[in-house]
Length: 188
Image (cartoon, rainbow, N blue to C red; front, side):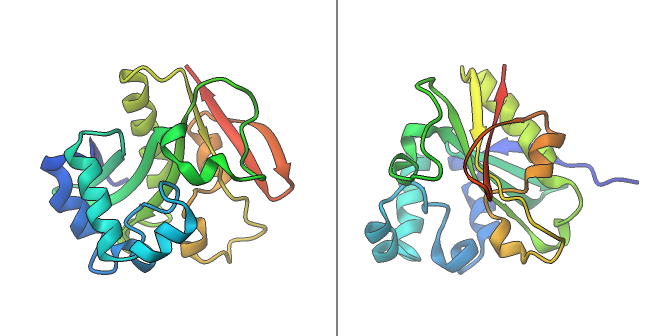
């Protein structure tokens, strides 16, 4: 029998679950899912507590941040999703530069708790993220997954998602500014 999951946006009410999921190290190296929201020097300076406080501030302002996945009452996964302009580092990326001038929401990051990895949760999180974005007026959701050459990619390098998960959720590849980095979209 497959695992049943439920989904909720990150809000003040779900903050404790987000904190529990990310653990004392803030997911990967103190990121607290602020990698794309800060320029690199600011991100590096804020690693750990600074990034956590910045994320808490966004949550307090009720910004669009992302979706939490739950297995029962336990936080199982995370998908960051917001209008592209919220992700400062995307704006300066040559490889992930915009493909046109249409307003898009961007899926920028995943974090899945170890017991729930490789169980299809990313695709389920994507479907929940799409519903969330559509409800809040998005017309296009864009993402920047990796395409591993084999199954030996360490989980830590899959934080932007795997192409096959996006395809399973109904995204289509739109462009590659780099052979290794597809840009995919979902149109409502």
